[in-house]
Length: 253
Image (cartoon, rainbow, N blue to C red; front, top):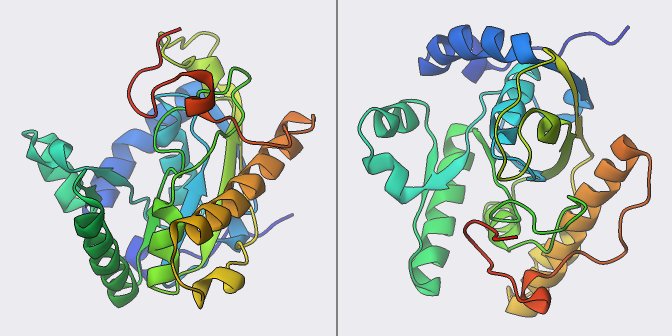
């Protein structure tokens, strides 16, 4: 029997996460039975970037509970505008979530550097959805990623772990309504080995190099998801622009 992961200091120290976890984790347990594979791969201490797939509006909740159960505090990168929402903004700041602004490329690059330094300084992990939004792939496979996750990891020399999760779509289909019955739907979360980005860390951070590194990450996520679903992943990631789809926002069917 696998020994439960040892909790990190950031989880054992009192924090706002304990208040939220005391409420959220039992509630999620009522409607989701989450099986976690590879929890021991997530480092108990130090900074990390976790890159999961994204196919349901509710899967951040599943990912957060899985990361908490794996022994780390689940911090996400969230849109800066959310930090200005009353109550929600307080909760995001109290739990150390990372704001992301939709600024110019230069400003975004500066923010990435600053964020990576803070992660390393405080030994925190952060969850970054590399797709940036819900996948447009009609079969819910990971689509083409954006470079945010690899930028963050390479700027601070932080390990990047791929994650795949499946089953959240049974609870809440993409752009659909939540379905709580039957209770305790099965969900699987798999954490993979850190992605080897050594070939890109010392090279110039050109758009082409960042795109190649992002492809490596998305392929790793797709491979993990293929293992969960038991079928091969597409050889190429879905490209929204090639299908006349918007890169962000709600997908109109």
